[in-house]
Image (cartoon, rainbow, N blue to C red; front, side, top):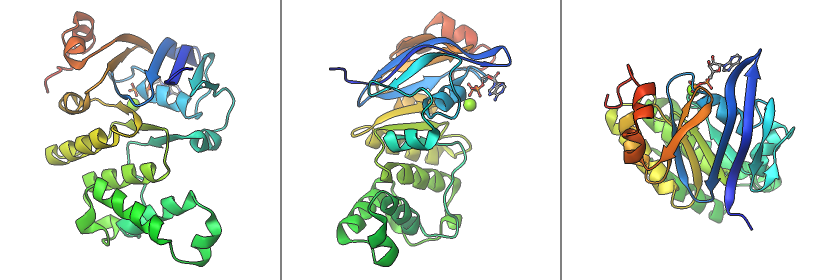
Length: 250
Ligand code: ADP
Ligand code: MG
């Protein structure tokens, strides 16, 4: 029995001969919150693209809960339990916070009761719990276009969680956020990490320090440069070198 949620073996992705990922090996236990850092162009987004089936590997393989994802289309991988949050929030701006969450929560149930009736009380409870988790209780009935960028990010993370994924992928969730919102999003990820496996890709080092309670993986030129606890990684001369000109303490 393996408790690895994700195993990646000798993964290479070439774009016209350029290797965005190069012989990359990676594995992660179920329940981990893994932070992936690396300079621009290191291959971080491509890494997520392969896991979600958006990009096919040129070589190597990706195993999710022991199952090879080769040639499985994106929507099926989503249904298998991998949820992804993109950099820009994708929420329905003309719907309220609660309506956005209701919509996703109900997509996962038998569709007929929700098309022809009101959400059941259990579903309401679940959505209300989620609204509390994402810290938007006071804004539950507010239209999403009135939320700040950070609140939209939290709503979208909530919408992902409503799909009950086994593995949550988030790409630079702190990008463009105020310091206060960055901290809120970090706290949200930490609270979700208690019951989910999460991969968070991040550039903002302060944010990384906030959320990196487990292992950090450093990507560089399409491969894993090193891995370890945040304080180990931060003091690794190889990491300092690839971040030269991009100071770790910004
Ligand atoms: P990161 O997210 O770490 O900044 P990316 O995964 O976006 O890095 O990109 C890694 C490298 O692969 C970059 O040099 C980028 O230009 C290149 N790349 C990414 N996607 C494509 C593509 N579809 N076609 C060609 N090159 C690409
Ligand atoms: Mg990227």
